[in-house]
Image 1 (cartoon, protein in one colour):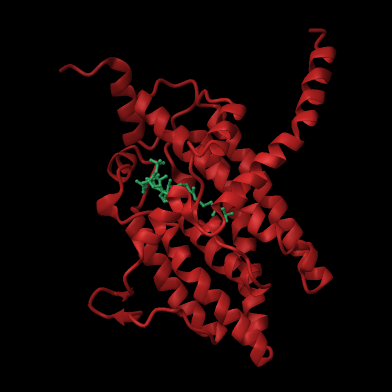
Image 2 (cartoon, rainbow, N blue to C red):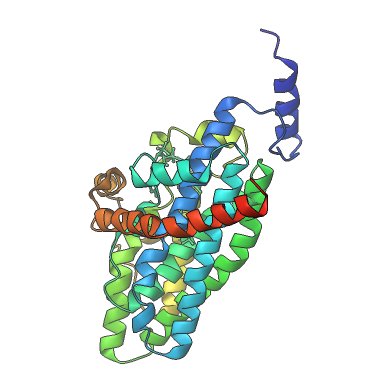
Amino acid sequence: MQQAEPEIIFDDKIEQEIKIEPKDWMPEKYRQTLIRQISQHAHSEIVGMLPEGNWITRAPSLRRKAILLAKVQDEAGHGLYLYSAAETLGIGREEMYDQLHTGKAKYSSIFNYPTLTWADIGAIGWLVDGAAIMNQVPLCRASYGPYARAMVRICKEESFHQRQGFEILLTLGKGSKEQRDMAQDAINRWWWPSIMMFGPPDDSSPHTIQNTKWKIKRFTNDELRQRFVDICAEQVKVLGLELPDNDLKWNEERGHYDFGEINWDEFWEVVKGNGPCNKERLETRQKAWDNGAWVREAASAFAEKRNGL
Ligand code: 3HC
Protein backbone atom coordinates (compact mmCIF):
# COMPACT_ATOMS: atom_id res chain seq x y z
CA MET A 1 0.00 0.00 0.00
CA GLN A 2 1.47 3.43 -1.03
CA GLN A 3 2.53 5.22 2.24
CA ALA A 4 0.77 8.54 2.74
CA GLU A 5 3.11 11.51 2.17
CA PRO A 6 3.31 12.67 5.84
CA GLU A 7 4.33 9.22 6.98
CA ILE A 8 7.19 9.16 4.45
CA ILE A 9 8.41 12.53 5.74
CA PHE A 10 8.12 11.32 9.37
CA ASP A 11 10.03 8.10 8.68
CA ASP A 12 12.67 10.05 6.78
CA LYS A 13 13.16 12.46 9.71
CA ILE A 14 13.56 9.53 12.11
CA GLU A 15 16.05 7.93 9.74
CA GLN A 16 18.04 11.15 9.37
CA GLU A 17 18.03 11.90 13.12
CA ILE A 18 15.94 15.07 12.58
CA LYS A 19 13.95 15.82 15.73
CA ILE A 20 10.17 15.46 15.60
CA GLU A 21 8.63 18.69 16.92
CA PRO A 22 5.15 19.25 18.42
CA LYS A 23 3.67 20.76 15.25
CA ASP A 24 5.04 18.01 12.99
CA TRP A 25 2.82 15.24 11.69
CA MET A 26 3.39 12.04 13.70
CA PRO A 27 1.70 8.61 13.80
CA GLU A 28 -0.99 8.58 16.51
CA LYS A 29 0.70 5.56 18.11
CA TYR A 30 3.98 7.52 18.32
CA ARG A 31 2.14 10.35 20.08
CA GLN A 32 0.38 7.96 22.46
CA THR A 33 3.50 6.03 23.45
CA LEU A 34 5.32 9.31 24.11
CA ILE A 35 2.45 10.60 26.26
CA ARG A 36 2.54 7.30 28.12
CA GLN A 37 6.31 7.27 28.68
CA ILE A 38 6.87 10.99 29.35
CA SER A 39 3.91 11.38 31.73
CA GLN A 40 4.95 8.26 33.67
CA HIS A 41 8.50 9.57 33.76
CA ALA A 42 7.17 12.84 35.22
CA HIS A 43 5.07 10.96 37.78
CA SER A 44 8.21 9.01 38.78
CA GLU A 45 10.10 12.23 39.45
CA ILE A 46 7.31 13.69 41.60
CA VAL A 47 6.61 10.48 43.56
CA GLY A 48 10.39 9.98 43.82
CA MET A 49 10.54 13.08 46.06
CA LEU A 50 8.64 11.25 48.81
CA PRO A 51 11.08 8.54 49.98
CA GLU A 52 13.94 11.06 50.20
CA GLY A 53 11.80 13.90 51.55
CA ASN A 54 11.22 11.61 54.53
CA TRP A 55 14.84 12.25 55.66
CA ILE A 56 15.18 16.02 55.13
CA THR A 57 14.33 16.78 58.79
CA ARG A 58 16.65 14.01 59.98
CA ALA A 59 19.76 14.61 57.89
CA PRO A 60 22.87 14.12 60.09
CA SER A 61 24.35 17.57 59.34
CA LEU A 62 23.41 20.95 57.90
CA ARG A 63 25.53 20.15 54.82
CA ARG A 64 23.71 16.85 54.21
CA LYS A 65 20.35 18.58 54.78
CA ALA A 66 21.19 21.32 52.25
CA ILE A 67 22.30 18.76 49.66
CA LEU A 68 19.18 16.61 50.16
CA LEU A 69 16.92 19.69 49.99
CA ALA A 70 18.55 20.68 46.69
CA LYS A 71 18.18 17.16 45.29
CA VAL A 72 14.49 16.80 46.20
CA GLN A 73 13.83 20.26 44.75
CA ASP A 74 15.62 19.18 41.53
CA GLU A 75 13.29 16.18 41.25
CA ALA A 76 10.27 18.51 41.41
CA GLY A 77 11.79 20.54 38.59
CA HIS A 78 12.40 17.39 36.54
CA GLY A 79 8.75 16.49 36.96
CA LEU A 80 7.66 19.95 35.75
CA TYR A 81 9.93 19.83 32.66
CA LEU A 82 8.53 16.43 31.79
CA TYR A 83 4.87 17.35 32.37
CA SER A 84 5.49 20.35 30.08
CA ALA A 85 7.07 18.08 27.47
CA ALA A 86 4.07 15.75 27.66
CA GLU A 87 1.66 18.72 27.31
CA THR A 88 3.21 19.52 23.91
CA LEU A 89 1.63 16.23 22.74
CA GLY A 90 -1.87 17.40 23.60
CA ILE A 91 -2.53 15.99 27.07
CA GLY A 92 -3.43 18.38 29.92
CA ARG A 93 -1.74 18.52 33.35
CA GLU A 94 -4.96 17.73 35.25
CA GLU A 95 -5.59 14.67 33.05
CA MET A 96 -2.08 13.36 33.77
CA TYR A 97 -2.50 13.88 37.51
CA ASP A 98 -5.88 12.16 37.39
CA GLN A 99 -4.28 9.17 35.64
CA LEU A 100 -1.66 9.01 38.42
CA HIS A 101 -4.15 9.36 41.29
CA THR A 102 -6.54 6.76 39.86
CA GLY A 103 -3.77 4.26 39.16
CA LYS A 104 -4.33 4.45 35.39
CA ALA A 105 -0.76 5.69 34.96
CA LYS A 106 2.35 4.08 36.38
CA TYR A 107 5.39 5.54 38.06
CA SER A 108 8.72 3.83 38.66
CA SER A 109 8.45 0.74 40.87
CA ILE A 110 11.54 1.77 42.82
CA PHE A 111 9.72 4.52 44.72
CA ASN A 112 7.44 2.04 46.43
CA TYR A 113 10.16 0.92 48.84
CA PRO A 114 10.64 2.53 52.28
CA THR A 115 13.66 4.60 53.35
CA LEU A 116 14.46 3.02 56.72
CA THR A 117 17.82 4.63 57.60
CA TRP A 118 19.98 7.59 56.54
CA ALA A 119 22.12 5.16 54.51
CA ASP A 120 19.09 4.63 52.24
CA ILE A 121 19.59 8.20 51.03
CA GLY A 122 23.08 7.21 49.95
CA ALA A 123 21.87 3.99 48.32
CA ILE A 124 19.13 5.87 46.46
CA GLY A 125 21.60 8.47 45.16
CA TRP A 126 24.19 5.90 44.10
CA LEU A 127 21.87 3.17 42.78
CA VAL A 128 18.51 4.75 41.89
CA ASP A 129 19.89 7.98 40.44
CA GLY A 130 22.74 5.96 38.94
CA ALA A 131 20.21 3.70 37.18
CA ALA A 132 18.21 6.77 36.17
CA ILE A 133 21.30 8.31 34.54
CA MET A 134 22.03 5.06 32.68
CA ASN A 135 18.47 5.07 31.36
CA GLN A 136 18.16 8.82 30.79
CA VAL A 137 21.40 9.74 28.99
CA PRO A 138 20.28 7.87 25.82
CA LEU A 139 16.94 9.70 26.11
CA CYS A 140 18.84 12.96 25.44
CA ARG A 141 18.95 11.59 21.86
CA ALA A 142 15.25 10.63 21.75
CA SER A 143 13.58 11.42 18.43
CA TYR A 144 10.98 13.71 20.04
CA GLY A 145 12.52 17.19 20.43
CA PRO A 146 10.89 18.44 23.65
CA TYR A 147 11.67 15.16 25.45
CA ALA A 148 15.31 15.04 24.32
CA ARG A 149 15.85 18.69 25.31
CA ALA A 150 14.24 18.22 28.74
CA MET A 151 16.55 15.27 29.36
CA VAL A 152 19.75 17.26 28.74
CA ARG A 153 19.10 19.51 31.76
CA ILE A 154 17.80 16.62 33.86
CA CYS A 155 20.87 14.46 33.24
CA LYS A 156 23.23 17.24 34.34
CA GLU A 157 21.45 17.40 37.70
CA GLU A 158 21.22 13.60 38.02
CA SER A 159 25.01 13.28 38.00
CA PHE A 160 25.16 15.51 41.10
CA HIS A 161 22.45 13.30 42.66
CA GLN A 162 24.42 10.13 42.00
CA ARG A 163 27.68 11.59 43.27
CA GLN A 164 26.24 12.86 46.55
CA GLY A 165 24.75 9.41 47.19
CA PHE A 166 28.06 7.67 46.50
CA GLU A 167 29.78 10.12 48.87
CA ILE A 168 27.29 9.33 51.67
CA LEU A 169 28.04 5.59 51.30
CA LEU A 170 31.80 6.22 51.05
CA THR A 171 31.66 8.23 54.30
CA LEU A 172 29.61 5.55 56.07
CA GLY A 173 31.82 2.80 54.64
CA LYS A 174 34.87 4.42 56.22
CA GLY A 175 33.06 4.97 59.51
CA SER A 176 32.29 2.78 62.53
CA LYS A 177 31.16 -0.84 62.22
CA GLU A 178 27.56 0.31 62.86
CA GLN A 179 27.83 2.84 60.04
CA ARG A 180 29.36 0.28 57.66
CA ASP A 181 26.61 -2.22 58.57
CA MET A 182 23.94 0.46 57.98
CA ALA A 183 25.39 1.19 54.51
CA GLN A 184 25.59 -2.52 53.62
CA ASP A 185 22.01 -3.08 54.82
CA ALA A 186 20.78 -0.23 52.59
CA ILE A 187 22.62 -1.65 49.55
CA ASN A 188 21.15 -5.08 50.31
CA ARG A 189 17.61 -3.63 50.24
CA TRP A 190 18.00 -1.28 47.24
CA TRP A 191 20.15 -3.31 44.83
CA TRP A 192 17.60 -5.67 43.27
CA PRO A 193 14.73 -3.09 43.07
CA SER A 194 17.23 -0.71 41.38
CA ILE A 195 18.06 -3.13 38.57
CA MET A 196 14.33 -3.81 38.13
CA MET A 197 13.96 -0.06 37.33
CA PHE A 198 15.17 -0.73 33.77
CA GLY A 199 11.92 -2.56 33.07
CA PRO A 200 11.02 -6.17 32.33
CA PRO A 201 13.32 -8.44 30.32
CA ASP A 202 13.42 -7.57 26.61
CA ASP A 203 11.44 -10.68 25.69
CA SER A 204 8.52 -9.46 27.83
CA SER A 205 8.66 -5.75 26.94
CA PRO A 206 5.70 -4.83 24.70
CA HIS A 207 7.11 -1.40 23.80
CA THR A 208 10.83 -1.93 23.18
CA ILE A 209 10.82 -3.09 19.54
CA GLN A 210 8.60 -0.29 18.22
CA ASN A 211 10.08 2.40 20.47
CA THR A 212 13.58 1.45 19.35
CA LYS A 213 12.47 1.74 15.68
CA TRP A 214 11.08 5.21 16.50
CA LYS A 215 14.40 6.06 18.26
CA ILE A 216 12.62 6.88 21.51
CA LYS A 217 14.60 4.04 23.07
CA ARG A 218 18.20 3.82 21.94
CA PHE A 219 19.04 0.69 23.96
CA THR A 220 16.90 -2.14 25.29
CA ASN A 221 16.03 -2.67 28.97
CA ASP A 222 18.47 -5.60 29.28
CA GLU A 223 21.33 -3.74 27.54
CA LEU A 224 21.08 -0.79 29.96
CA ARG A 225 20.62 -3.11 32.96
CA GLN A 226 23.80 -5.00 32.03
CA ARG A 227 25.79 -1.76 31.67
CA PHE A 228 24.57 -0.65 35.09
CA VAL A 229 25.51 -3.95 36.75
CA ASP A 230 28.98 -3.79 35.16
CA ILE A 231 29.58 -0.27 36.53
CA CYS A 232 28.21 -0.93 40.05
CA ALA A 233 30.17 -4.18 40.40
CA GLU A 234 33.35 -2.09 40.11
CA GLN A 235 32.18 0.95 42.10
CA VAL A 236 31.10 -1.14 45.10
CA LYS A 237 34.75 -2.22 45.52
CA VAL A 238 35.72 1.44 46.10
CA LEU A 239 33.07 1.58 48.84
CA GLY A 240 34.56 -1.48 50.50
CA LEU A 241 31.06 -2.98 50.57
CA GLU A 242 29.31 -5.73 48.58
CA LEU A 243 26.38 -6.20 46.20
CA PRO A 244 23.91 -8.79 47.54
CA ASP A 245 24.31 -11.26 44.66
CA ASN A 246 26.35 -14.47 45.09
CA ASP A 247 26.11 -15.08 41.32
CA LEU A 248 27.79 -11.77 40.46
CA LYS A 249 30.93 -12.80 38.57
CA TRP A 250 33.02 -11.32 35.75
CA ASN A 251 32.55 -13.35 32.55
CA GLU A 252 35.67 -12.83 30.42
CA GLU A 253 34.06 -14.37 27.37
CA ARG A 254 31.01 -12.05 27.49
CA GLY A 255 33.03 -9.08 28.67
CA HIS A 256 30.31 -8.42 31.26
CA TYR A 257 29.36 -9.39 34.80
CA ASP A 258 27.03 -12.37 35.10
CA PHE A 259 24.42 -11.78 37.77
CA GLY A 260 21.69 -13.67 39.56
CA GLU A 261 18.02 -14.18 38.73
CA ILE A 262 15.78 -11.10 39.18
CA ASN A 263 12.53 -11.73 41.08
CA TRP A 264 10.10 -10.62 38.35
CA ASP A 265 7.11 -11.71 40.45
CA GLU A 266 8.13 -9.06 43.01
CA PHE A 267 8.54 -6.49 40.22
CA TRP A 268 5.08 -7.09 38.73
CA GLU A 269 3.46 -7.18 42.19
CA VAL A 270 4.96 -3.73 42.93
CA VAL A 271 3.96 -2.42 39.48
CA LYS A 272 0.42 -3.72 40.09
CA GLY A 273 0.24 -1.66 43.30
CA ASN A 274 1.13 -4.27 45.93
CA GLY A 275 4.56 -2.93 46.94
CA PRO A 276 5.49 -1.91 50.51
CA CYS A 277 4.61 1.80 50.02
CA ASN A 278 2.32 2.06 46.96
CA LYS A 279 -0.81 2.95 48.98
CA GLU A 280 1.04 5.54 51.10
CA ARG A 281 2.68 7.14 48.05
CA LEU A 282 -0.59 7.61 46.14
CA GLU A 283 -2.43 8.85 49.25
CA THR A 284 0.32 11.44 49.84
CA ARG A 285 0.17 12.58 46.21
CA GLN A 286 -3.63 12.82 46.28
CA LYS A 287 -3.50 14.81 49.55
CA ALA A 288 -0.91 17.21 48.08
CA TRP A 289 -3.13 17.70 45.02
CA ASP A 290 -6.22 18.38 47.16
CA ASN A 291 -4.32 20.72 49.52
CA GLY A 292 -2.98 22.63 46.52
CA ALA A 293 -6.43 23.23 44.99
CA TRP A 294 -6.69 26.75 46.50
CA VAL A 295 -3.37 27.74 44.90
CA ARG A 296 -4.55 26.58 41.46
CA GLU A 297 -7.89 28.37 41.89
CA ALA A 298 -6.19 31.59 43.03
CA ALA A 299 -3.70 31.47 40.17
CA SER A 300 -6.40 30.94 37.53
CA ALA A 301 -8.61 33.65 39.09
CA PHE A 302 -5.65 36.06 38.97
CA ALA A 303 -4.90 35.10 35.35
CA GLU A 304 -8.54 35.59 34.32
CA LYS A 305 -8.69 39.01 36.07
CA ARG A 306 -5.43 40.12 34.52
CA ASN A 307 -6.56 38.96 31.05
CA GLY A 308 -9.92 40.70 31.65
CA LEU A 309 -11.81 37.42 31.13
N1 3HC B 1 8.19 0.71 37.16
C1 3HC B 1 6.89 0.74 36.78
N2 3HC B 1 6.45 0.32 35.56
C2 3HC B 1 7.39 -0.11 34.70
C3 3HC B 1 8.76 -0.15 35.00
C4 3HC B 1 9.15 0.29 36.30
N3 3HC B 1 10.42 0.28 36.68
N4 3HC B 1 9.43 -0.63 33.92
C5 3HC B 1 8.50 -0.89 32.98
N5 3HC B 1 7.28 -0.59 33.45
C6 3HC B 1 6.02 -0.74 32.74
C7 3HC B 1 5.98 0.11 31.48
O1 3HC B 1 5.54 1.44 31.79
C8 3HC B 1 4.97 -0.67 30.65
O2 3HC B 1 3.67 -0.43 31.15
P1 3HC B 1 2.65 0.58 30.35
O3 3HC B 1 2.50 0.02 28.96
O4 3HC B 1 1.39 0.56 31.15
O5 3HC B 1 3.35 1.93 30.35
C9 3HC B 1 5.28 -2.13 31.00
O6 3HC B 1 5.92 -2.09 32.28
C10 3HC B 1 6.18 -2.81 29.97
O7 3HC B 1 7.46 -2.22 30.05
P2 3HC B 1 8.29 -1.83 28.73
O8 3HC B 1 9.71 -2.08 29.03
O9 3HC B 1 7.71 -2.47 27.52
O10 3HC B 1 7.97 -0.27 28.70
P3 3HC B 1 8.92 0.90 28.14
O11 3HC B 1 9.41 0.54 26.77
O12 3HC B 1 8.16 2.14 28.34
O13 3HC B 1 10.21 0.86 29.10
C11 3HC B 1 11.06 2.30 30.81
C12 3HC B 1 10.08 1.16 30.48
C13 3HC B 1 12.49 1.78 30.61
C14 3HC B 1 10.85 2.74 32.26
C15 3HC B 1 10.79 3.45 29.84
O14 3HC B 1 9.43 3.81 29.93
C16 3HC B 1 11.63 4.68 30.11
O15 3HC B 1 12.79 4.72 29.75
N6 3HC B 1 11.02 5.70 30.74
C17 3HC B 1 11.71 6.96 30.95
C18 3HC B 1 12.60 6.92 32.17
C19 3HC B 1 11.80 6.71 33.44
O16 3HC B 1 10.62 6.79 33.48
N7 3HC B 1 12.51 6.40 34.49
C20 3HC B 1 11.83 6.17 35.76
C21 3HC B 1 12.67 6.61 36.85
S1 3HC B 1 12.77 8.36 36.96
C22 3HC B 1 13.85 8.52 38.21
O17 3HC B 1 14.43 7.57 38.59
C23 3HC B 1 14.03 9.87 38.79
C24 3HC B 1 15.40 10.04 39.34
O18 3HC B 1 15.57 11.40 39.61
C25 3HC B 1 15.60 9.29 40.59
